[in-house]
Length: 189
Ligand code: GAR
Image (cartoon, rainbow, N blue to C red; front, side, top):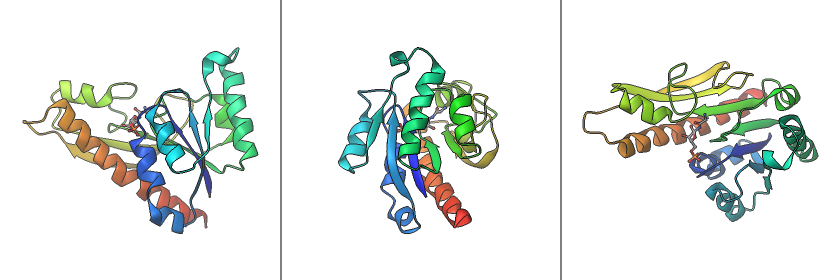
């Protein structure tokens, strides 16, 4: 299974996937990183692992369709089967969705449908929730909607700061995303 990971920022989820040997043994090939932020740390992480990077910015195209079509063309060149979004902060629209129906997976740092969109961990923390979580789901045309594959719970403790909570949410992400990809590899074999 040849995948492209889409990311915009730090790339700790990219690292959790790209650094997991069990996934490679099960047939995963991370063939490409797609990134829309030329200065993102995830680019360094990919280069360290000799994973090709396609830096592609919406501002360089006349519209979103042309932006996504350039991505679709590159994915086709690389024979990509699945797309894994790992902190990719752009909405995915029809051009990509129709090229990869039911083959685009996203990770989100809340228990959807709670706290979709931006700053999900912070909003759960500010709302004094006792628990938040992580969702891994297929993408559809909505923002953080689409069929849920798995969710994980993350407790929020009285003594938490936003930083300690973020750390706990990310740890749960790094545990769940490789598991979901492993299950997918087994299923499509
Ligand atoms: C992760 O927490 C991921 O769930 C979130 O961005 C972060 C990326 O972290 N994604 C979204 O909010 C998508 N709506 P990372 O760059 O360290 O993997």
